[in-house]
Amino acid sequence: MTETAEQILVVDDARDIREPLGQYLKKQGFRVRLAASAAEARGIVETARIGLVVLDVMMPGEDGLSLCRWLVARGGPPVILLTAMADETDRIVGLELGADDYVTKPFNPRELLARVRAVLRRAPPSAPTLDATPRRFAGWTHDPAGARLRHDDGREAELTSGENRLLGLFLDAPRTVLDRSRLLDLMAGREAKAYDRAIDNQISRLRRKIEDDPKQPRLIVTEWGGGYLLAAEVEAAQ
Image (cartoon, rainbow, N blue to C red; front, side, top):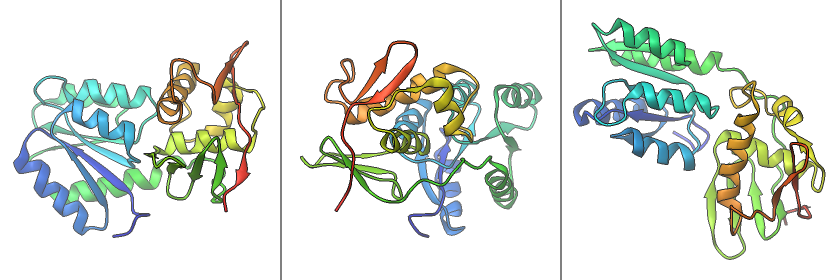
């Protein structure tokens, strides 16, 4: 298993399913994160680079369908639902919400593995590969290959795939206004939904990681008319 392996998030309130499934996926070469609730899963997705989510539908509190809706709305990773054998309605609703596949409980781990690999194979590629050259701006160093940010003061942040690509686009064109339609075109892949709020949400999350005060941003600023601009000088990192 390497740092370049896809990272799978398993979300299930049942420990006797969540942990053995996590161990099985690790043995198949994936990196794995585990969450026992939708709230815990949201925190992981906000801060980690997740390639696919295996999501139980029936959970106490916020259920899997609600979390699936949130993941799809934010342009998140592909989702495979775990549903009860009799709950055909949940499977239909989940697919209508944007889930990529489902597996019914009880399931054979080998079947789930096959579906995981199939979904990852058909996930739309993000458009042009990011430049892997680390770059500096406003005290931050962006490592696109590792999807990480490091600040001169010691702060670090892990970026999701969408945040990593979005920041790369701004670093490619510092002090240049990029409107939403242009950003949507450049983002491509799952991260690019056909509505402006997808970009606004990505911007908000990125600001929380790099701005001293996200409510009064000084690095990624909003320009009149629906665009954004990186207000910083950019240079190659030594």
